Length: 188
Image (cartoon, rainbow, N blue to C red; front, side, top):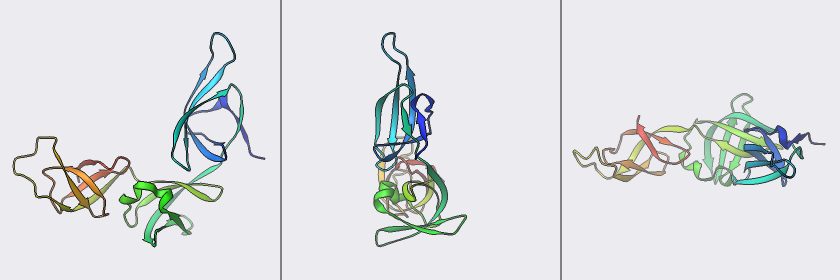
């Protein structure tokens, strides 16, 4: 039997099982209205789909806890749409599909350190570092003196992803990119 948790004890960062899926509690507010019973309004994120939603529960309602495990892993390589990762402690190798990685797979670099969340021995989430340092492989030449404006241009980085960069960034420059938004951060 799964361990049960009361909605009144929920805190940000806890994981529970809702509708058969591991769900992260993003925010939880206990509300005591003037009339009627108290309730808990929670902002939740489904770890399998990434969907964020709000839901209301009765106060002290019992919900099963989801036991998730976070492991430090290293990205090795991609082959035939499967991404191969290695546990940095046990050296065990795992495969993860492109669907689990989602759009962030555009920023994977060989030997990159990742944090992998598993639920019931299945990978449900892969976290990349917040920023990566990468080289610009292809972009239009910059215009001399155009360093102040907020105008951007597309640039292809060494992972194959296209990001918007300021006009002064040129081919061969090393830049920092935010892996969550895919946006340019600074020169490296």
